[in-house]
Length: 107
Image (cartoon, rainbow, N blue to C red; front, side):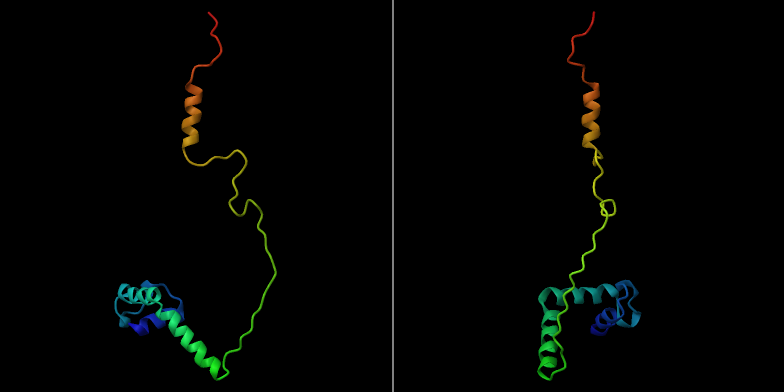
């Protein structure tokens, strides 16, 4: 099962595409999720980083990019002026139309 987790992480394939030789994908995923929840993956990464840094194999380079891309307001799903979501506004509008007017009626 450990090999199945490593295969999935290496390939990036969906869990359902895990080869049969690793067992049921649900079982492999549950183990992966359990290790993520209990911090096993974080401890493994820390151990590898400390070990490799001690022998000089890690180059700690930080790159900061100040590029900023802005999308047009319509591209990000901004609400259009006057457009409403949900159904409550429809109900309120129908009730408003159904109410008798406050103006005195002509006889």
